[in-house]
Length: 290
Image (cartoon, rainbow, N blue to C red; front, side, top):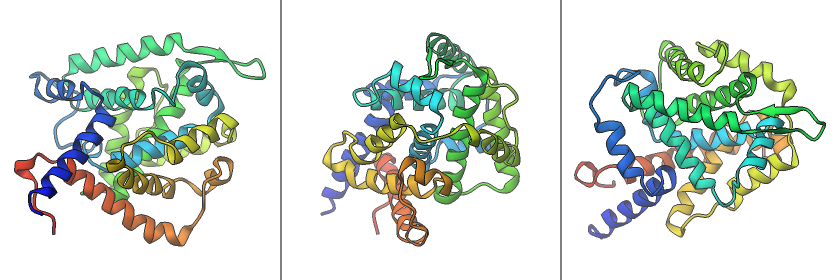
């Protein structure tokens, strides 16, 4: 039994890392964390604590669910990517960008931002009513940003190893605003209160479109995963839904079970993030399961 546990842990860790970081994730991780040079953010500061925690698995999925509610953002995804065939590729590219800008050298972070801005310039189209949209639109970029940061922060508060204090949460929002501004977001929120106000300001624009519901159904019910990764993913998905605001449930056809979400789902989410921490830990540092 003792020899089986490390094997299972290693297999789970490999599968999770492969899905999130991509097949060349190891090479990128070595460069991000190992290359010498100044960084945008100090090690141990709130942004490194949040973005380096296993709760990001819950926060990342919650961000994807929340972002689908903006019709222009969802239209861009539907028209310019194949989320079914390239779901994990898109996730790997997003996680790599977050890792580079959080932990990488300043030079690499600048290059990552410039690359994303070039991609955004090419993503344009027209809404069904004839209104044009562009991924480089500061207002649309602002929605993507606040949906992500609210999701990461909420997931870390509930499932993080060491939740931030109120002052540290404000610092986290301010740190992420530095990256958002470089991407083209105008006046990104710099405190938790400003983040809540920014989210509220977008609400009149949000709705559940057929594309949004199709994407949510795919993410929650039909993700292409090996058997070993399905149970923890199911728990992560339940935890992500449990953190979604109540007003998002009807337009996205998500369940609303407040008692279960505070008890059963919270316990499953805690167990799943704990399993991910254990699975991703190097073997020589991993503590035995109790």
